[in-house]
Length: 274
Figure 1: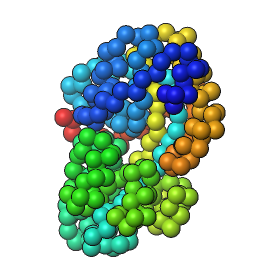
Figure 2 (figure 1 turned 90 degrees about the vertical axis):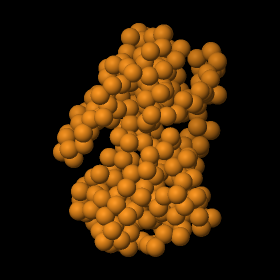
Figure 3 (figure 1 turned 90 degrees about the horizontal axis):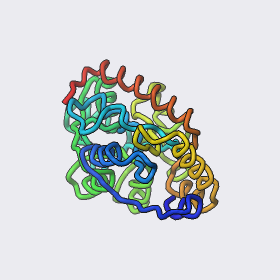
């Protein structure tokens, strides 16, 4: 995206990874930056929405970021290490019921979408899963392959290739239909679960809340043009991401509605603030 945006915006676009603290490190950096469109945040929208709900002491205001554009959505696989004593979702679930907390799952942090998904699964199946937080998806996947955890909730880019190399087994996917990247993996819906057990998410671009509307509109338009590039579309397709561009108004409304829904889920699960 950075390469495609540069000729559209007529300025240099630099990607600076700032992982840690469940995306709070990167979000705080952008929230406190100059509101001129020169510093923006690309992040998992579910995690960004959850942080103000779950965190008592964020280093930025809960309303310090504004949505610029939705880019793409992603579905998650429940993947386990190849040495795990279960090879199917049903076998894993039976094991988890016999051994509450016995299935450790690598996530992208306490309070992340993957963590909340584990809580939803635990309540649904009257058991518990042990959340093992990591500073991002790549180290979470590596933890499973290294035998440090039993499973991981990950987008396809992290685990599909590892299934092909027999280093990991994919038990289920959260999408409405089977992923073309892993067509042999059943959906949770196929397995009989209509309600969302694994929270969906997507990638959204944010800017400091005081960024002028004109600047935000220009950024959104640039994103729209970049997402029409065949190279970008091909890369999204290969990584298992679904194009989901939305304008500023729709992205803002979606974020508001999703935040309210997540707040209700957190309250229903009785997850305490920290």
